[in-house]
Length: 503
Image 1: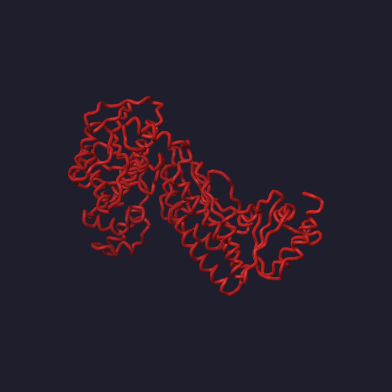
Image 2: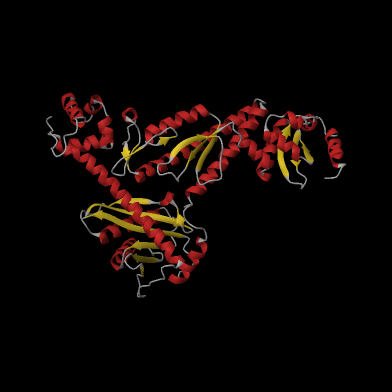
């Protein structure tokens, strides 16, 4: 910077008009570092260069900004509302460093969820870090945010920042103390994996709430501008920008598995060459069947986009067409259900379908496409014992090197389908085991049992219901409702002794 530049800058400021407009602060390299609006460009911009201004400003960021200003460019407009709109447009266009810093200032709350924790908690913070945490916000209405988090704790059984879960000897976690266990209707002792599913559901809910609040903020911003409360409108606009950015980053985070390396594009091209596909398989779906000795038979389908999990398109299936242990029939059913739906909705099929299994499972999947009179997309099986790729045509089985990048993508896809199916199976087993307590209550036949579960959803909600609520179920009166309520809340029997349903 030359000796004469500060004088030139001051002269430029003195010549500014006493009219509304937008000003762009630049550093010595000509980079735009801040964009602001003004009712009077002359008064607003000159305030930055008052004698001793940098020393008397309380906020360190503003002091730093003043020290970096080497030039100012202005754009004159007709009115203050026009200045407000132009300021927002230029902030979005240039994303100046100090506008971003002010938006992230400690005025508004964020919600932070760290997936690296064994039991992720929902914490309030005013500082966004460049880490692997998920952030929601900023939120201008802190009272509403705190009420929403309290609601989420009751609804989803999640931990907030003040949670103190206790590890149990069997590897599970006790989330709350006795008082909170009575207040919250969710199961209090859970595995870490089950708790993480709660976290995912709660994050989805909070993202939806964020979108609702975004629309509210936009309405408030427009109303403030209509009342000519331009400072309030600008403040709300900054929150809208920040919340829009957070939602964009959150969506990107959900569609990316942070534990996986980048560079899946090359792996997909390697897989294309190995399988002789017409194009890299950017979309892949994998099916897996899970059961224990023919009971609790379920299936999963996971969807990968560009080599990474796309959980919005995951699907879980209960087998409907038969009862028993037949992986081939189960595979035929779920593949048929999946692609019948896509065909009816006129949605594209994936670039590659992967079946967890060998030639029998592949044949079952092909039967589903034949029954639908639908041309199947490229289809392979992946037999786990030797990671052998099975083709549905006359090609011989293929064994790729275990370090082959294309095989590694297939393994991740298959393992994710396996995990998703087993998780669903475990959920159903746990629910069935909890519901089996009703078998010990005398006089409760299948009709009344079905009515109870249809009304309350599961045994945990039934146990939390009042006598009056149970009495409203078809087939129940006050006496039977009271007996069932007492039965569900009876003390546990001593170890080794059966429960007494008449106790």
